[in-house]
Image (tube, rainbow, N blue to C red; front, side, top):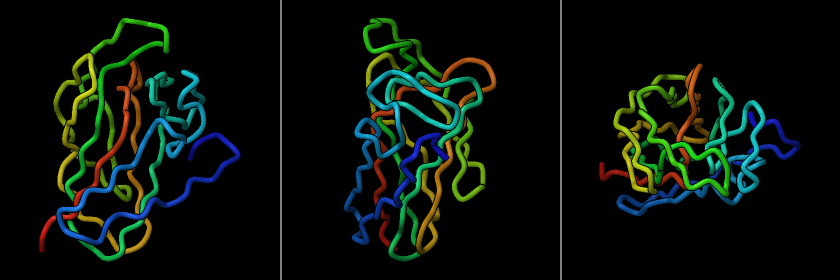
Amino acid sequence: MPSSSVAPVAIPLSAEAGTPTQIEAENGQLGAGMETGTATSGTITYLAVWPAGATYTLLFSAPAAATYTVEMQVRGYKPDMSSSTVTPVDLSTIEFKLNGVVVAVTGTTGTSFAKMPIGDLNVATGNNTLTIKAPATGNGPGIDYFIFTKKAA
């Protein structure tokens, strides 16, 4: 859970196959500290100023059980807003879980934002959680937004 006084709200996903739902990271839907370049344990930030091992849970809601293809707009680690240095991040060092079950995510981010797949996730009816945990050492990537697209049955 984010370490802020604002409780996360479940973001509703589209019920229509092929219609993407974009969940923005930088507007605060992922917790406090998004645009300031600061983070506290439990907060994932747009700029990826993650403390080692910090986790964040993204809460979203599905109208019915379905498979969604999930992508994220992501880049490497950037130490602060004024920095021109962006370090690529190996996504296999980041722990992703859907409803508590580990999801294997591979690939290395670039130094500028690009879409990368998280994978096809079997989403349950109602509220779901996507938990992201930074590595014990090193930093997490900069995440701009997540895209959930329902697959045809």
